Image 1: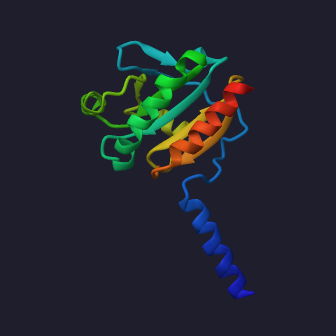
Image 2 (image 1 turned 180 degrees about the horizontal axis):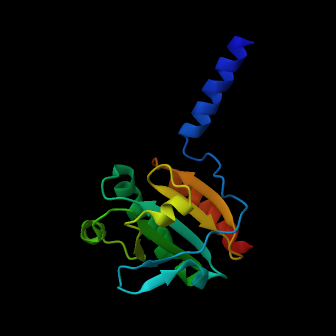
Length: 165
């Protein structure tokens, strides 16, 4: 019995380490929010109802975030014309640092600033980056924690599937 419990704990730990552990929000309505954007105005999630929306929580101190952002920008550029939106939610205290990184990486998707961490708490963000996919009806369908090379392939499959619905 003890050996079985150890094996189960190892298996669950390995699953969680993949970064694709199920989030508590999956299947629920995506919590609405409004945040100041890199363009100066506020953007509200509910304004994108009818589109597939990826919300990507990131920080400048996060190495995997830096690695993932150009790949996300490729997905955004490729699928925005067919109803895919990407909102990058930065959690740094200083938005200038975030904008410097955005400019260095040359990403074009909208960046929102969550310096008070209210939206990241609302979305139960426990790791960086955290990526949430919301369907056209406003329901959270997928939650991904962390990033490793190759995750973008799964994002692509999920985005395509949601766009077809």
